Amino acid sequence: MELLGMYLDEHLLLRWLHIIAMAYWLGGEWGVFNAARNITNPSLTLAERRRHMETAYRIDILPRTGIILLLPLGLHMGHNLGTQPLGGPWLVGMWIFVAVWVGLALTAFFKRGTDLGIRLTKADEAIRYVVIPALFLTGVYSLVTGGPFSAHWYAAKATLFSGLLVIGLILRYVMRDWVIAFRKLAAEGSTPELEDRLASLMAFSRKLAYFYWAGIITMAFLGTVKPF
Image 1 (cartoon, rainbow, N blue to C red):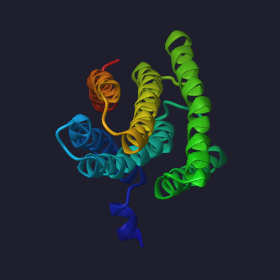
Image 2: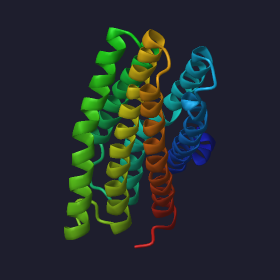
Image 3: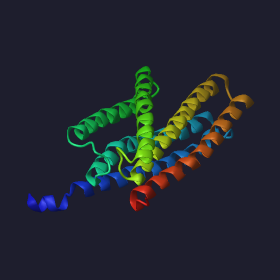
Image 4: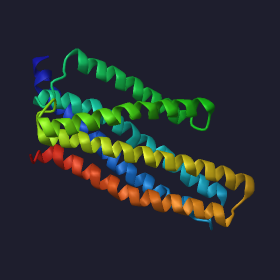
């Protein structure tokens, strides 16, 4: 057991999981971006376009899960490094809460398109409405006062993470609009107005995605280099 403990250092294990979550977040969003390109291609049949949209949704569950897991991973590692003061029972409670949150997000994914799936998705979003301002306010307050996050790089990372969660929410709303537009396509057929709507949604999401990727890369830089 002592030998096993030597190799299973808690912080190194958390860092490994953090790297995996970041990789799925960045890589998964790139996958969604490319899978979604053909959604707005009017030369394809509706069935083909639906397949591309389904592929985008299936890929999206990976970064969606990675984002949620980054919260307890970052807070746990922050406590180990001494940059945030809450540990012990608080961290245990955080992990239990996030386990429930991940379960909710996965169930919403598997039940997507149903009334239950819609309710669970809204519950998932409601959690983010609480997490985002909590992270943002704590991060900004820490940057100004030096606490409760004692390291500026850590406070900046938390603040940036809250902003990226906002972008993620907006992109989820865009994906929801895709579903609405495709229902109209199925019911009414292709029209210039509908195609323009899909094209404008895609153009908007592309622009947002560039800021998203830049933010994710910056988060990784702050956590690795710890420049200030």
